[in-house]
Length: 389
Image (cartoon, rainbow, N blue to C red; front, side, top):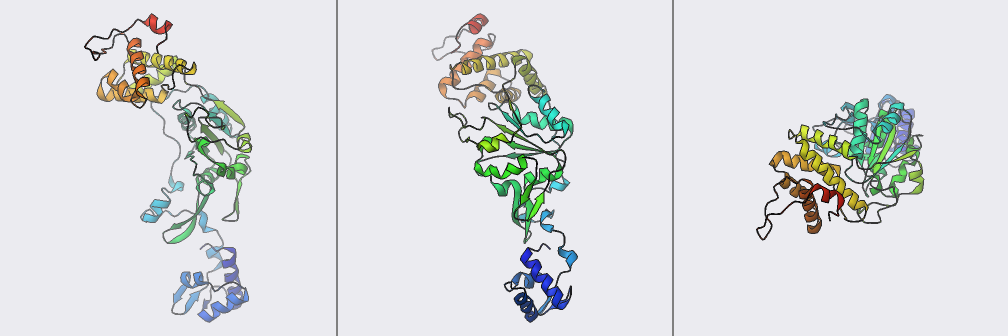
């Protein structure tokens, strides 16, 4: 039983008056409450009732250890399932190896930092779909190190991160948040999409300094174990998105950003590396086609170069190439796979992307246009030398 300071004062006073573990009558309960100047302890009469007008004082060993830090594992209770999704103490949080993963870019740098065991917060920034989150997960998978991933939103606050009181199986207990779990396990904490957060993230200031954090709701100081570290990923550098591509991202507090020891910019992979990634996806989905892989990465590379030159407003991410490969494995048709996976763009962009692919893959069956004429693909020289859009 967890006793707040006021409840403990009542129990200690009553124990001094009537003896430890004594069974009290209602009048004696009120007498003890009046002596220590606390309100009539209805909680005591509910929790410690042993019979009619009989209430047993708990022994000191029953409340000496703060039980609220223990998460109930009564998985049969619907309340526990809803509020505490899993029993963290019984889980292995080492990420599973990702089939087809290719280590590149900042992988080796992040691996060295985490392997060192030093507390050194890392901020990883880059455009969407280039493997930032997966890279961090696979570093931990390779090192056999536990990882707790938290997806940040504008609603994320101190209660979500550090924990709070929950009604668990009819009792109010403190359920530690993911930050506390990571600190006490000495594992890596991944703050994913951190630039979607608000100034409520400032509750992590002492944690980002490696000093631990004081849980105000428990009156308890939590110190991180050796090996604890923080990695944050974001599409921006914490300064918001001026072009509106990443709507919802916010300008993060400078003091918050300053606590990250190092920032790493994650670009898209080179053509050679991305081809390895695409071939890995094809092997995973049992749809290997090396020529198709070459054409896909060439197509994506041309689009990205045009995007960075200001020629188009959209681009093809590595994640979208994986989507295309999976669609190809399902439908067995290259153009159908590409059409399905670029359909989310506006009509002009979608048509431009499809047209460019027919030029990259000169041998593809492009069908007929609306007037019944066969569309003639242009040569590779025209793709490489001319404006594809």
